[in-house]
Amino acid sequence: MEFDPFTAVGIAGTVCFIISYFGTLQGWLAPDGWRFPAINLLGAALVLTSLIDAWNLPSVVLECFWGVISIYGLVRALRR
View 1: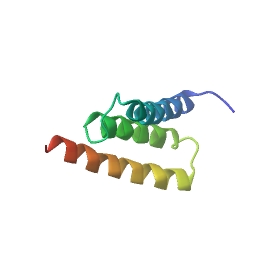
View 2: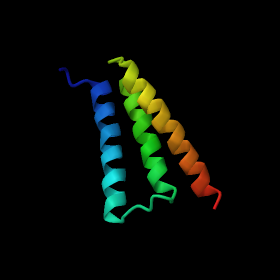
View 3: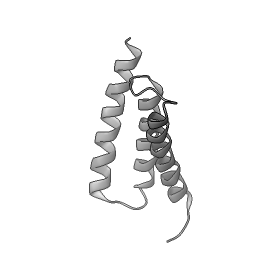
View 4: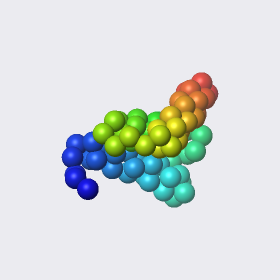
């Protein structure tokens, strides 16, 4: 596996998911706050960007849903 810019972007997106999940479990991020869905949206966008280079349909579908759900959570949090 080659470590190119697309791979680096995908790893950064994965780190976003890990940070948001772990941060929520630790109580650092509120699951109903705006930061949690914002970090997840960033992660989905970064992983989707990495898939330009290494296309994988199931991953694209997953990240699209992850992004849409994150947008929903972000809008919901900002409306409060």
